[in-house]
View 1 (tube, helix red, strand yellow):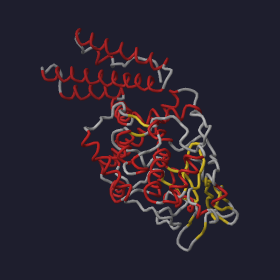
View 2 (cartoon, one colour):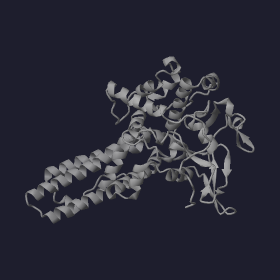
View 3 (cartoon, one colour):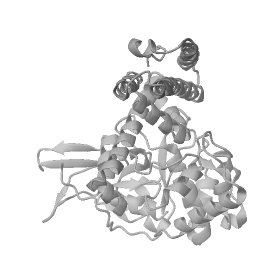
View 4 (cartoon, one colour):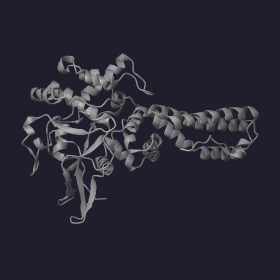
Length: 427
């Protein structure tokens, strides 16, 4: 990110009056100050706030200049063609559309950006480098979405019909480097972060793999309610690759059913988190995942990743909390396992992030554990989130109850057969 004030093209600047030039100068100075604060930022929140100020300065400069040009047009001091030309020049030089998209994204998803930047920094040299990578991906998705909505193309219609699981799986495999070519089978192998590599199986109509892109937060839950729980505005980004894990389909089924749980390993550090699987359902211990691995063999096993990318801790924490609550409410044997393997052996969540809105979590937890949850759950919550409004108590309760009903309606049975459309075309 270059240290430079917002610029107005000389031929446009020459059209500005003295008072207007003073206003422009003040905006430029504000941006320079924000750029300086951004460069010296020692924390992620300070960096993001400074970047927001930089973006707002650029946008304000463009808006003020275009407004001044519009006034000149009204006074008939320029033609409509000249106004359109100067307006386009200002927008292009300041990259106005891109700046608006970036500002919209970073404000609406402020908490996600903060969390993700904190998690990315161990593998990046600076906050700025991590931000550029994260924002590049977010803005590309925003542009694609806008184009899709504008054109009303086939992709938009497909998304209205349902979640694009095939695309999600491709993104997850790429994110975790969990796919590689296999010359012997003339197809691709896929990697499970708990049990290793698998070759693709050839069937009469398609190519199949036992590795699935497991959703950490279920894709079927309403995005608005989830967004409020996570403290963001708009989509909760459930289609992002860091809401997935490449897992053997038997493990995916057990995770969906709450028979296993993934936790941050005790003793792990915030900057170097290690995740492990904990088996809750003892009836699965002797069940084979493949010929040489049973469920008991992966109980307590660390997830092994092939690159620096990791699932978002906020999503794994959500899954952890929801599994914990569901076990306490529905199944005596799982309730005992929760108390023994998590509470009794110190396997409760080990990182210190603020992941979920406390008021909504309290509603979700109502009736569980005699209306009581360990205090550690509420150590990982927040009361308010930057740029995310807090609803009045009545509306807050309605959102929580709605989310609770959606979670209760999910299939909780262990089913090894998946009907997800993940068939591989090797494209």
